[in-house]
Length: 71
Image 1: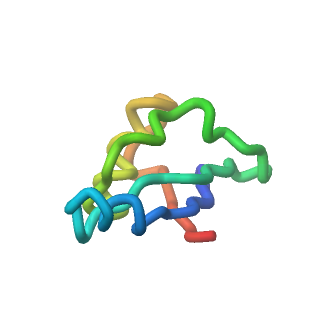
Image 2 (image 1 turned 180 degrees about the vertical axis):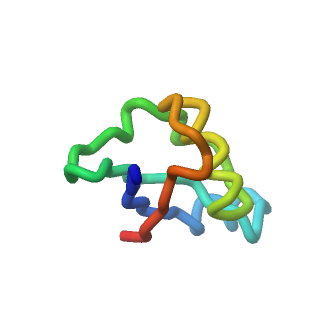
Image 3 (image 1 turned 90 degrees about the horizontal axis):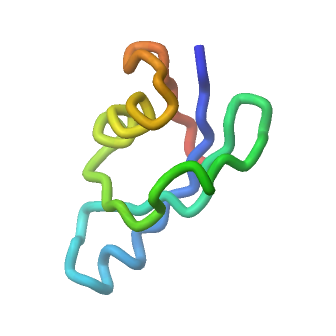
């Protein structure tokens, strides 16, 4: 199962009035490789499910196979 380690930035969202959302500031794959450059770090996510849907599309991995761990 692909595991992504995610660093979440809540502060930027709060500053622009999008309280309750987060942006990804760091994304590591299951081998601890930084794959942050593969995503749009400007997107605001509402929760991990929203993020998983996005990662599923970007990395062409079935949604059910993605697991998220916070850094």
